[in-house]
Image (cartoon, rainbow, N blue to C red; front, side, top):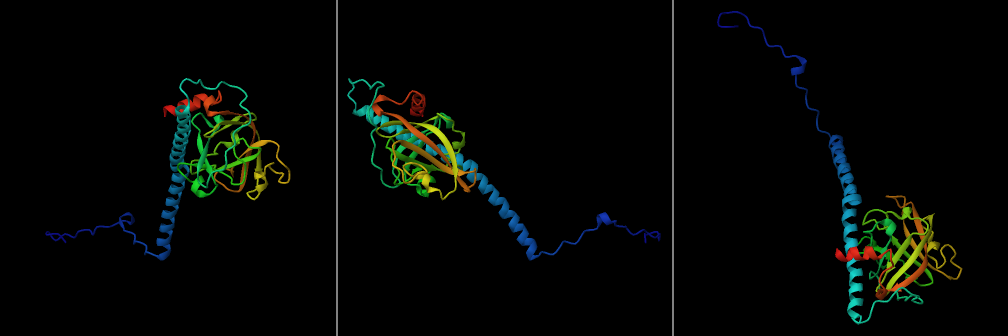
Length: 267
């Protein structure tokens, strides 16, 4: 009623104006939200692990490898008689084969021009996580396989993805591609021959003659191993190279490698 006594219409609230009652909180509802949040966090972690962290670790590993290489070159220059010219390309005889170092110790740097001019990674003894997951190492030498330049099988391993992805582009190698291994003694040149895909249990690829454990070796072989396919450990991808030549540090790097070595020296 109004002051004049006239009836007033009651406001009518339509369905749109009605508030729906909030559903009760249930254990299943809370659990669902927790699982969704956990799934998002897992996806973010995977992205961080496979992209940002991989890129960061790859950069750190490359820097460490460059420091190691530059150090060997500096030591050789310091030890050389200033009046003595650098050795010119020639037949340098049999390669200098070093003894395998202790576990976890860096002893070589790997260069693969096919992987890009900025690719160089440290090789250390052992294939455990302390080497393969390291921010300064990344490539591991299988113990009991041969050393660079030695007759038999110089076999190494690296991740295909994550932790720097040292063998990320292994599937892109082409027949005749050079693979260089630098040590404190000099540079060892291998030529890529072929790829093979094997089960993780196929350890015969590490034999002195890969795949033929009972045969005596007559050639020096390089074997690169990694997981396959990308982001999986279902099988192994194996790349084989054959030793071609070596030259001491005093002779400088091979012609194809020279600009890469020069660039890394500039930082």
